[in-house]
Length: 195
Image (cartoon, rainbow, N blue to C red; front, side, top):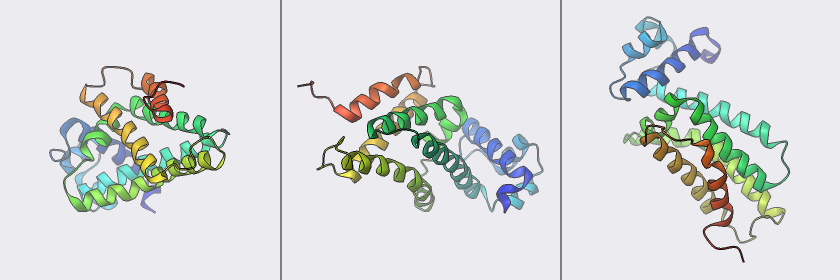
């Protein structure tokens, strides 16, 4: 399995930096190889091309994140608590890795349809976690029994995603993690006054 080969992670981490600093289209394989401290040819022992690097990078990072999130959610009882933890972890992951934030929020948004489909495929695992929380909340009476899970999932992911993108577009100048609670409140209660 190539993932267990010693240079795989080294190349993935180098690709995050090279793509964040140069943009996907300007980040030639040679730049990624230089950043990783390996010969250009070494990259091709692990990846077919630059697109394969981008998808693998997203699979690797997203896979680890989903695993971590599921472990942390296991200790929480209420769906609302789980939702807060998910928002906090999402913002924390991006805050801790500014290069990765640029890659996920800007560089992964490629116009190439085939690439978009592959990225959406990787996202399914994460969206499944959102669904899990929503279904649980419906079942235990925390969330409305009429809740449209698919619509709610789009709204939750879209809100987190847009909040993170705006933060990246503003050069990550403010504290993204500080927005976790306000975002959580908006997702839970909307904009209506408490009755």
